[in-house]
Image (tube, rainbow, N blue to C red):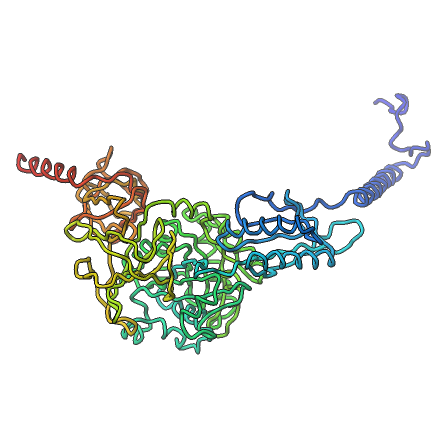
Length: 625
């Protein structure tokens, strides 16, 4: 056995001063070294903490385009600098279609520096002067402390919403489709938001939204109705509680939320799909009852919105009817569904105003964020959080995209036709592209015979308020004067207290004569079969939804395949069985028949001459057989 002391090493039984201590000394020496090592690390960590600041938080770097502007501070600018800042604000407002968000106390690279209380007060005062110069108002959304400085001074950053006062009724208009199972509280929630009064627990708030007697009797929506909620330039709610008419709401509002109330019962599913495809909603609000959870058509409505790529947020209603545990169980159930591979969403439960602001901003920036609100239409719990969210919610398209659409030829999608006393024929719908003015001459069609008819636009109204110019993406009603409405398609008639009668129109458009519109009986689409009980093959018949077109079509052929199963893709040729339709290349397509469902987009339109030739050859083949 080798003696380590003979090799010049210190024996385990000796300390570093050469004093032996045996086995006890061995343990004591190890412990003392451990203690000294820990004390040394503590002293070094304290020294490093004193010398190094906490890494500062960052925002993403400022983008040159868009409506978000970073400003470190706006303290006592010169007149030349002030004019430059006002011009810059005007640009940001234009990018946000009348809205801009200023982050005060943030550098252009996104570093959160923060300002002292005096500098922040001066900066907000300057921003208010800038807003007044361009005809806008400011609203302080939130302030946050930034504390990582050595001197421990409290510094803050501020997030400010700048909203322009509208000119000539050109307010920002966002359309929100309201989805959810029957009896989930959709119409009641809309009644509370738009009327400004809480519900009595027995459905009083929803009575003004119903169009028909049977809806009032059953409490169930069977048709599509529209309700409006406004926000003025200061971010305050404008609804029927302070305004007697829709015209007054429009005049006082800088931003308008148009709710499209859709049916929840499964037997009205085709009406719900028509509302999603025809009225082009910007967002979808899925209402889920807290006491029943995900039931009925909830999953189907969620799937429809996702298939059409409509951003969706969720409202859990009726929290006053159940315990907090039941509400949390419903929220967890929703979170599980949203996180499934088919959805791939990131749920974000909104609990306070700060969460509502963050949710509104991230909702449009990231397609996977799904805000969840829990509220009550009876007690009013958390109802203000939803209003904050809707107030800040930015539009999906920026000014550049809208300008590109406005440069195209006029195309107005007709959804309904009215007969109004002393006015005549009135059509309602959405302007897909171009600009429409009073007195403009357009052609409308196709009729059942496939023709387009000439007409002249009389007056224009948006949300029952007069408007001289209609721009791409805006919904409106157009008066056609003495135009004979019997020449147009009509599908279903109704009687209401507002107009003598109106008809739901399917597949009709009003376009510029320069467009030379064409129609087709057959078209091809790249599709994904979402579900089919067996196989999808030639000869199958499905109901096709493309925009405001809804018609039964037959599968003529599947390119490269004999049949399709659930989850498979293919290019399919469809043929309408009744009459030709007007379609656009690239338009989203949804088809269904029973439990069969699929989505896709139009890739090719076959002209009528080619349709006729193919039909003749198809008939000859049948005769030969």
